[in-house]
Length: 600
Image 1 (spheres, rainbow, N blue to C red):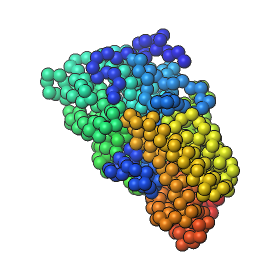
Image 2: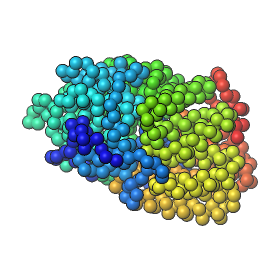
Image 3: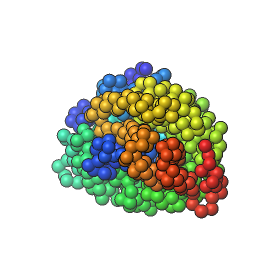
Image 4: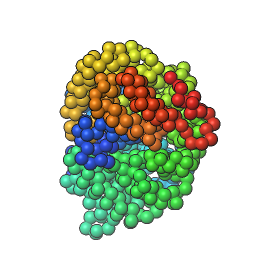
């Protein structure tokens, strides 16, 4: 695909030159639990945690709410382009692959993004460039990477001398894990800075301060310095990530002290509290809440602040408080699919499954309308499969089997541009297993394993082993698991130099651990009961809708295994956990515990 850059050099990422402007060289279980490394050591831990953070687009392995022999390709059959290649540098293997011309299309101002709650302005602008800049930030904070890039490009066209749109574009490409493109956009921003400039990164260390003055930059220069510090961490060699992550926190603290009313810097500080430097506002815990609440005091209608408070509080298990922020996010940004989706995350915890399904359906309708209006392929939208998956799981938990099957099948058949999120396709295979269709599950798992990327090969092969356990027994399942282990070894080799290698490895490990535990349980091995309970306990306790919604599928399989293995006491314990996983807070409006428990 020919890039618009070749005909519109001004409005494309510009080739960078000079030091610091080229590319630099978690599993939650490994990131939060230092020293946990081997497959056996993470047994149970990973299996219970892995659903908290791939979204995003989602990328630490408690997923909430993201190429061949050295790179990770797109889904077979996906005709989308290969992403941007700024300055002649290819994106890394884990970059989301979105056609460059799609990110650069002209944009229009439209209501419903929440931009009105964002105060950032472009100096000397007649108004329209700042409007597009704020709209770009609103889309960025709603994980709408395509629309954010389009708005920032539009702001750049209308204010060609401003650095801010280019900083915004760097933030988008950082979210897409395309470090080279992000660096090139920052180089474009730096060339547009007026007055003293912050020092460039030198040997991976972001100085940040104004050269020869010792002063921290302010305004536009501060935003540039902040994103450069983040890129130093998110693109670091795996062995340097921890040190660069701490430098990022230190740099942001100094920049925020010099710019105490800057909401975007506070948001970045909150994100930097996550286990890895690539945080997107989900897993920063209590430390992140401090920064988000400061930001909220300065900008009470900032959609992103409410979004990140909702995610963070959800992950802390504080669902009532999270629901208030999720509802506010949806009210501020009613046209953002993820805002409606995020509201649905918390509604089941208050007992309102019907409202959750309605919000997920609203997100689905907004996406379909957007694809039709803008001629966008669903395969280029990371959020598509995520929303369909949770919608299918919500229908499942409500006992609406036809709707669940339809949505989960569509999710399985829709490509995902985020290499870290392709394990979501496995939910369809799991659904087939718990609904008594092992032959169909085996066929789907083999199709999944045959797709052209290493993560799908691992997850599909592990799920195939589970299906064979039902069809042919322990010996056949163990042979298939060896194929999955071979695929895992290949994935480890290909991801060796990836900054986020532990995240993608954890997703793969998780599926092998679960399949291995099921096989051990059926085979009557001595440690199988303890392993199954460890996994089940973590699954039932998962605070996120992503994990809580999916846990039912796994708990149901473990319960069946315990019964078939002649362990009625274990089966009863797992059945109780199934009930707990289906239970909502008092005052359920839609689905009783009994109804949810008896969904197939």
